[in-house]
Image (tube, rainbow, N blue to C red; front, side, top):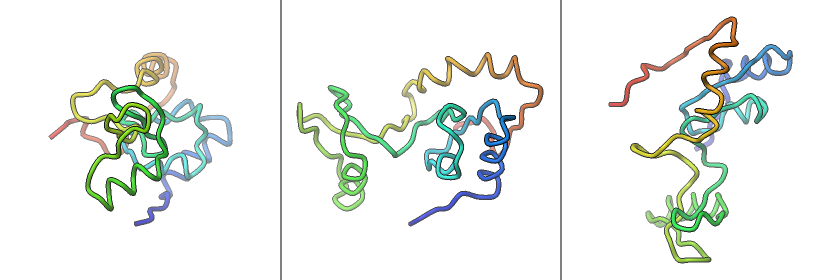
Length: 126
């Protein structure tokens, strides 16, 4: 299934291009903010994304497309070519620590912003 950025994703990209966007924090793992054109510097993907993957044991990078197709088509995690460990997309599963980029930036961004817009989140985990 191919998903496309919404008007909201494009709005974030427009703010970025105009130089008035501090940051977009997203819990979505679909990468649509990136597809819409929000620059990497302005994007914090709190729960990661599917654009890269790595071994959970030795952290050796693994081809993300091969990882995704193995998981979908074969219903199992691919194995690392280096150590034989399981490979997963660079997404955060429940109970895992969020990327350091989130904690490195969030307090500064909130304190130095004139406006914070929160969309589509209850900030609750069911």
